[in-house]
Image 1 (tube, helix red, strand yellow):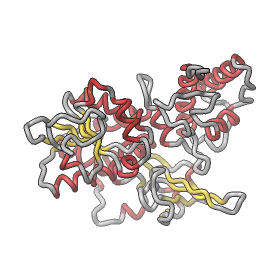
Image 2 (image 1 turned 90 degrees about the vertical axis):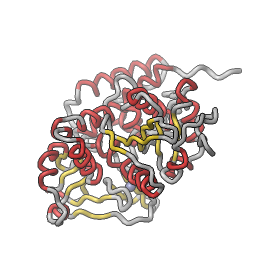
Image 3 (image 1 turned 30 degrees about the vertical axis):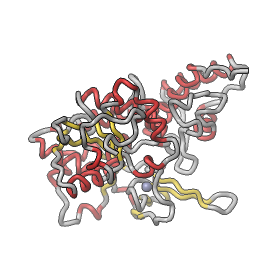
Image 4 (image 1 turned 180 degrees about the vertical axis):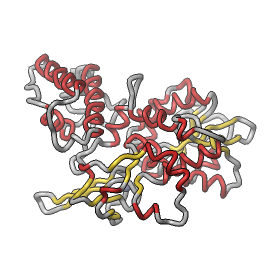
Length: 367
Ligand SMILES: [Zn+2]
């Protein structure tokens, strides 16, 4: 017997859940729930109830239970049946230790015409405060944002502190939400610099969460004591600008080492333009994404906006993750596969060539 077709309404509901998780986290209400709920949260709760009743399943009793589902029920569960061609079946929307939206949640909430998280990051980078003046000034402000997901007193007393840049873009920062503080302190991941949390479990082990999700667990975090005066970058910019910046820096270092000239291109979240060996203009963009199929959808859009070939640089963990490149290749589509190359930073200079790609869409064109 063939298994039943996945129910598309399950995918639509799961995506709607991703968006309300982001909205509740934005209001610092993922840990403690208080009435009244935002209108959209109530609507999605009602929609979930109806969805369950139609399938003879018990509906969630309220928003706290709905959020528990987002934490515990994976995308591939028979309840949602989100196809594995869109997201990994084990994906959950809320991290159990961090009690924050997972990165997959942010990526799914950014997917499709109603996407809103990555889109907010693009919008914020397009604001006059960031964009005003010559391109070089825009580049510097973007770099500042990428390098400083959190601003503390320590930053402000450094000799290199740039008051002019800070003044122009400080509106893109906010107070650290209470849910990220422990006794007033904020912990930051020792690798990616994004918020971090560790939590003792009943079995005596310690659960660890960093917002970047892909960092080694044995690097000790940095603690910002009494972080009430610290400022934190908007979550959308932390996820879609600060995180891939590490990969972007590694990619630019490799280009410099290989003596390949590149030029800053500020459109969207920003990238760099490189001339290929026979004159094609490549957009080189760094992406740090958990979900390869959602990444492929974004790369398609970025390639179309650029109007030419795109070199998507991904971190080594993504390149090495089982199935990641295959899922990306399957989702990118034959119509643009010739114009899209996936690479790690280390392999980037060698991939800047204009010869045709191998048909699987993931291998180096000149390998
Ligand atoms: Zn980290």
